[in-house]
Image (cartoon, rainbow, N blue to C red; front, top):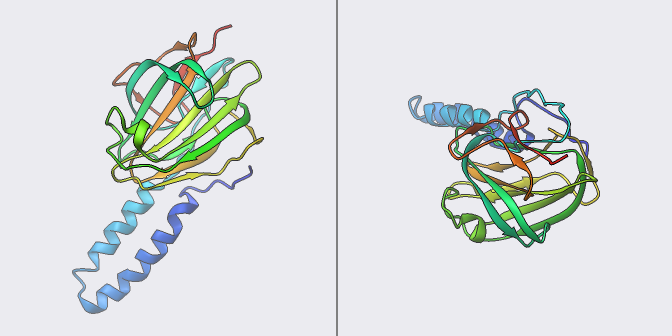
Length: 213
């Protein structure tokens, strides 16, 4: 996957073009209501922003796939890709967070699966079981992990630009979820997790944990 990186994700461009076109149209009708598409234009640009990140280069680390707040770190039976006990790190993204998703570890995409579902608030404990979601399983050669993109009450569209067999670099952009969401990370049970509930994380920069030696 070779997707060009822009300061504002391409998936937001159409919204911005439409809103920009509405500003002069609304101005003709009533200059005051032209404020509405103008405000929405800047909100969309803010939401789809893609800031540069400094990717840590330490050995055997797992970095955050998303910006947001850690909702939980718990043991979990993962049956999609890891097929057994794993550690699940759940990250909630508000509409004010950067919504670009980044690859937590270098490796090969060995699993992809998409499930349609409901649109419950992403912070609900069972949202990842019933909401629309996208699974990406990555094999590093020594370990396997999985990243799950989960929609929320506002988020209604999962975007994922990678496919089976793609070779990924740590910190590489692989997708986004439009307008509020949750991203989950499933790790080997013996991973040393370095974050806890309530911690704020930055996609591509925060070290979530370390693989065992």
